[in-house]
Image: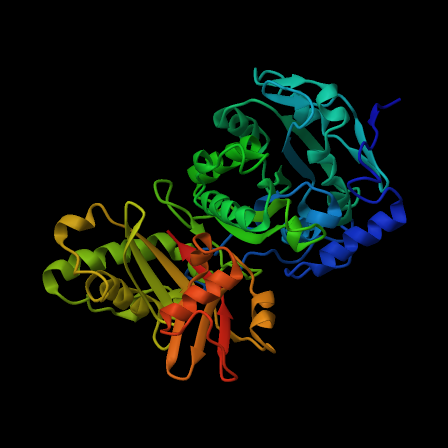
Length: 493
């Protein structure tokens, strides 16, 4: 008889009865912000993917998600966050045949990556078939070993199975690997061998900070999220993500391949089903293959707070190059270059608002942008690049000597949405840390913070207070005429 690994955490981390478990996972998926279907994964293949079409003369904007990063706590705590990532895989359920699932070892010390000898893994929803051929194909790698004890009580992998079964039914095989002590290159070598094509997706299981108070956790998780979105696994400490090691392999490959990464969730247990005095952090990301950035550049980030990649993302390298050319031109010419918008791709001709941020060794050197779209994206970008370098009143004009040591990033704004609220507490409750850009206005006073500012000011009340000060208002100010709008950004760095 085929060996079966029985469910170890059913009834603890998720419902132990099939009907209740199916309903709870469906509830998490329905709560996800990305469009999802209620059809089981064994239905006919989807007729479209999450990639967005472009004009005839341009290349595809983005591929479908190749990998996700999702949390592994009890579903009542992290289920909604995990569902945000899984919802992005659903449009391609019909073509996905294999899930490569990596998570950290919590109970057994392991050198390298541990395989299971089982042919099936069991949950209340039924058995999940293991891709034995794929695991056998790793046997020659010295960092991979067979270790059933590492899997027997491990929850970091099992907690994902009900989501996988909901999304893909019985139409997929699983490649589960528990990751212990390993280098990023050792993990990356395993992932490269299992990478496959459209039939294969990668799932990396990790929680973020553990057992800090709510405010401290928000601050630390914001820093972790920023490092993940820069594909900088080395900036993530062991106390910041228990799945740091499996994640390091994926981020290493993502940097080499110039993959785009999109944050789709960042919360902690104090936001869901726990108290705020001792919380665990959760984040969710999707990664896509494509030509968003060159291998020697930082990757672009898909639009924060949106469910589809921004069509302009495919031209990230072009836009970054134009910022550099604008700054170098303006050092001598004292003005931005003339732009013939007709020569640029259609995605860059749309009316869009942009911000350009300049930094030197992580310190701000200039930031100018446009909140209301009123000219073609490419024109707006070049004008704001010039203004950030030479007309930001907080800084002197750039010199030629500074440009070589300069870093820059581009933020492309999504359309703003006016918020409705009864009072300040209601407004604060609606804010989504790490996701929302915020515009406030009271009379003639107006100011904005980009979503990136959450990395420095992660608590909503402080975020709003600092934004009021930027607008020339007291942090305690409130009036019946106070207005606010939220927006997302696509960041390319």
